[in-house]
Length: 220
Image (tube, rainbow, N blue to C red; front, side):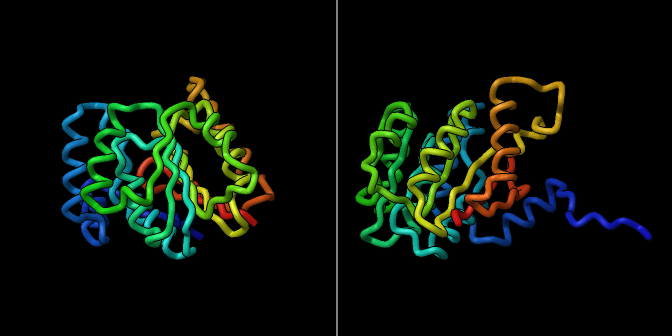
């Protein structure tokens, strides 16, 4: 009996087809992406458009009002999440760069979501640990320095309400997670967190091969 793969390998053309058939663009998101591309190779840190759409859909689907993001860069993901929150919703953004987040601030203002966002510059672990014990999140996105992924995951999970979602980016790490020869600190950190979450009974999780891989963990 033939084994049929349960996935479709994407060619560049098929990938473009998939993106074009989702609600993955609007003037502000497009303008932000174009400005970010002008920064050069570092622009690769911006999430894919379809990731942003997925994040917005998920945040709306669970009725999220309180959200947190670790790793803001120029603001594409935060823009998508903030738009999905209600008028009285709040997104805490953690980053270390005044330079990149200055771009984010401009687009938050242009999109009319700046009032929903608080930006904290500094080590995210310190920002999270300084939060009151009563502070809870409905939705979270982790996309920062990979060596601290496990710390961010634990600090956020303990503050996530039941049935809240935690999304983690770059979990496939351009395929390096299955390359035993790749033993960089970042690769090992991602690999170890992936293995940990696969057996973490505090959540139910799925890893999706979207962009560079994204894990969605729902707190039980």
